[in-house]
Length: 285
View: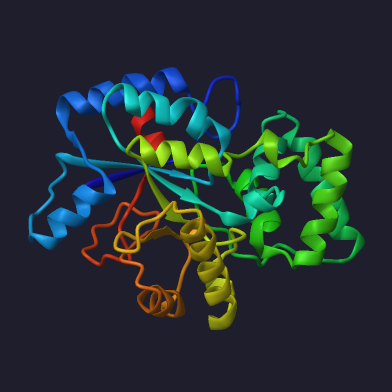
């Protein structure tokens, strides 16, 4: 089975997006050559010991951005397909996640200027970054450094200060309604055959948290989704933010009866808490 990971699917967003027209074109190609399956289909196959080879494809979408309702779910409905949407519950508390702020900043095509501001602020406090290990991504090295420092590698007080400077300088919106799906839209999507999964409460790097902090992140996310009737107790799934987790994370998933968890990798794995996902950018090749 192949699992593709998408974030933004829209038009005219010049950073890390999949054009919505290209998405529909690629969906038609996948339908022609493969079988798109839902989370329920996956569960049935595993229950019945059915082997799912690469002819079977799952489509997953992270972060609950507005385009998933406005474009993705409607295109999937048009072709009778299902998707799995991973939702971070703090988006319902008027909290715009740092990851969306960063993506909005990077879409402005002022990266070199923003990178200089980052370095300048770090130099003011003599904070060295030369020895910080940066994970390889589809981004070039400088963009990966910028993102990962401001997502989770810098101490939170330094991150927040620099982001506030960038938000003010570039007049970035902090209104959740400009970014995310709401509860009623998610309910409509579920009613139309989409599945909802967990993505933690506030999108942290779980591997950097202790057991209790991870438990709070995952359990509070689960409660919000359950209380709004967005998930099925027998079909609970989670995508690790940034693809990061550790042995404590797995213990918590077992404790909370979460059956499936998705990481970001092309490596083969039969572990249901380490289901591999392929970045959608490979479909552009």
